[in-house]
Image 1 (tube, rainbow, N blue to C red):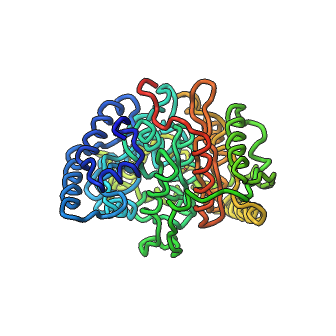
Image 2: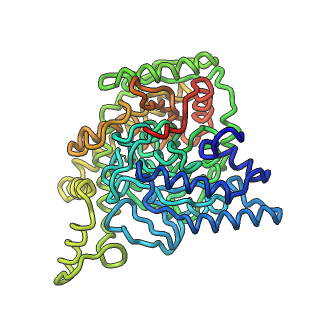
Image 3: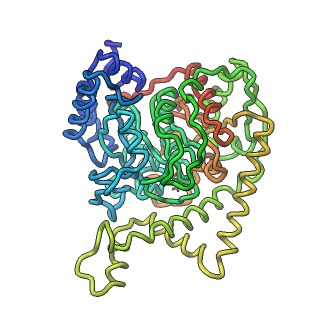
Length: 490
Ligand code: GLN
């Protein structure tokens, strides 16, 4: 392992090396902080970097180990979090001006679990404002860049996390996914991203966008690394009433399972128009890999797929308009100066504090929920959501997992879609149905475009069957070896 630079190690190798005291947490943390110093000016993947605090945590983890005790599976391993997870006393911005200097009074459950597992927190990662976007261009802190080609977007909204992992600046990160925000950036940055079943990971302290869709999950360079992090953050939480009390299985063990006899559904609707030829070829290769290991490809239909995007863009904004009502300049966050009276203070605070995309969602959502339109828009969207969920239920009666592209194209250029919301929304066309149905999904690298950009395959599973998609993704990863750390001069 000595021949491989530290920043290219897998998380599991790093964890083992610390545990066996081949390397100290301080050495690992210092190496990655140096890597952040070198790479972050190019990719803008971090909003907040925590050098002193991370070194202090690393020293504490080293001492605990010397005294004979590892906290948990991530003991001494440097990781980072999307800046949507509350971190006590550490600025948590959600990519927005309105929270640009907000220091939460408590840790999110995910933050707490990462700490209990022994991980060292390197920093907070860039994201689209309030997780609304597919490119990280809506961030108040400027766009993150794709380390494979810095004139391109890293995807979004967890684009900072995916870019940071692909650039070797952390061993893993935790992102969130409301309509694709873990899987799409993972796909565009050539790394692995898991959107767990709704209710699998606690949303407590995770700043809300659309509460019935939001779910946190890992982004890492390998499937076993992602499985290890998922095992740490998953589980029931009394503080999130939508978190489900289902035992957490051994996800890491699932990555070693055989896929022989596995039935892999290929939804006709996901391989239709608008799909880039290089993406199609790469996903077909992923299928070939599974078939060569004894899995069986089965053509299926998810007939309501064409309604998913419009359903999402009613339900998502409706929930967002309600969740974002709390940013009023009264209790916390940004407040405008010199306003005369309460109404002017609130409207100017929100006018100055939110960016264009967030305002667009608040307006769409408020409209969809208003008297006279509620049934026509919101009520109807909920009914279509049920139809979409049934599509998956029926499909999973005959198959174990579903294989699709994660995104219709490889990473597009910065600026290319930012003024055209509809085109931007289309980049989540394959990821959104999964959130509406509440099922788990993963993106795993499966190829490269002719101009050297990563391509991901998406696997979808039954509710709480993350194990099947992890097994299939790990098999694809073993069969199709690809570089996981972007070259230094992308
Ligand atoms: N890109 C989608 C949106 O803008 C999904 C975002 C997400 O998953 N947070 O809503």
